[in-house]
Image 1 (cartoon, helix red, strand yellow):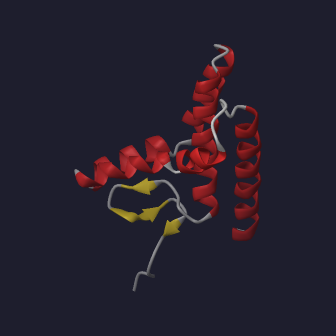
Image 2 (image 1 turned 90 degrees about the horizontal axis):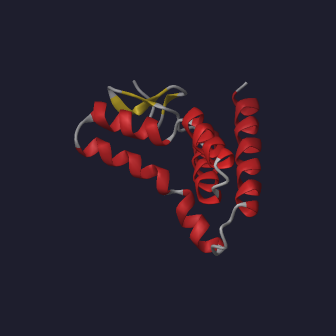
Length: 121
């Protein structure tokens, strides 16, 4: 089942990357590679505490929010907003493909996909 879910997330990541080629805003590829990882700025909330970190991380990695942003951009005919939504969606799918899920309040390593990092004893 785990491999099937990873394949599903890989497919969603690939679709997002394709859409970013359509809504590339004239930016060079190297910049898009950097921008692809900008949603991880949500980890800065962990500088406050784990609850704040989980909230900010989950906010920047919520696929539903990403779809709402992209759809809003589409309805407003605003390509930068579409690109932001697609970027958020693609990054979230990529993270889930790699095993990083939405965070619980108790620990950065505790995600909806299980624990990341070293195995718990």
